[in-house]
Image (cartoon, rainbow over all chains, first blue to last red; front, side):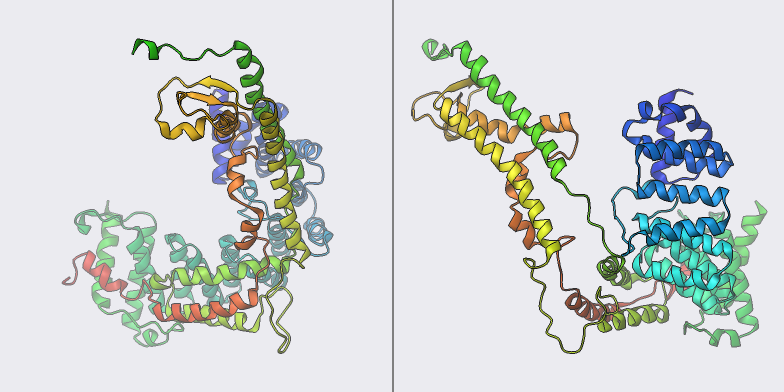
Length: 297
Length: 271
């Protein structure tokens, strides 16, 4: 493999924020000691990328090497500090990592953040600022330690400040769901839907959460929305074989429609006051037909 | 015809060597120097306390909510609870940096001249402006003093008389061919034309280009709302409440009639 295509691939991973750790590690390792000459201005982001990938594949020694180079290059940079925290998470105990993040966040009395545009692309998560990055790492360590009440509290504060953090909202929904608080999870997911209305996977998650919480009319509507978003119907819809997420959504439609017909009382017990859909038998029949088609091919 | 096609003027090659080239080279070098001086003058981005970020971003929440309201991905009950919570927070001033406003204190818009943070921003603009202006004035003075009325170069293409004032500034001759360019005009051509060269030498967003900075005066920038400019968030939040209420009326869930839409699409009920 020639060098320029390898460099292109690494840059591509960085831009898309992909976590192809094995590939990044294997492609990047030859450039570890001559990053500056190969990458120029991009050497910092590259070393960070390689360090994160090495932690993922368990080569802490390489990650530490990257970290030493980065510290020499950018002394006192908050971004490198955040990487140090991630390194600590991988090597030291979670308590140590937590103490480290708390130190970063309290270092500035005002809990300051330096919002730098363009800095977000290489951080482990899509963050607008470094405060947000360290903060989110802190929250994830807290969750690992199992102190759910503190996690929810911190995460809510974070989301109140950085409202557009879809990842954070999803995490919050996941935490609520893990505690059985499905209506709270649904509320978090509704923020996710507002922020990323184009993503059918989030709608599917909302549908399944609504189903679990017992709000069947809402669930079937969400399932149908997923179908509506994902079936690429060209010409006659009957020729179309549902695949992937659409199949799962059809399963949801079938299940919900069947239960709603069997127990009509469920239709009126919607927490979100959603009216029960009409044509339930037809919907169930359609869903069954689509599923038969999906599974018979 | 034969007489006019011959050049009516001969320029001393020394003009080329000692006037045309020096002016061009000096202007390029000054541009590059200015780029680096501006880089030195730039202060690192301000650190913002957490409360201030929260205040700045609070409006984004309602913007996201309002932008989707006509084709909302969430049903009305969920939408309404978010919307009502938000307007309540706005009315109570929950998002304000300094906490809810106290009692009936008169809400005066912050004065940019007394706020030290805003003053810093304005000073930074002025400093950059000075770095732009001073070298240009010096170069122009230099050209005016030493090379006034020099004819430097002949353009290789004919031009109409309209270009006379542009190309022969500083020479009061009515009947000289428009193609001859005077020293002062050469300065202006460089002044506006070197941007492309700077972009090649210094990269995309360089600070060497004087022309674009001329248009933006520091005070024009101060008038327009920009990040870092003090704004009366309390007032903005109050206004946002009305917008939220309005959007609530427009709300329509995309899932409202999704089942009939799907059944129609699959031909199960009559369209």
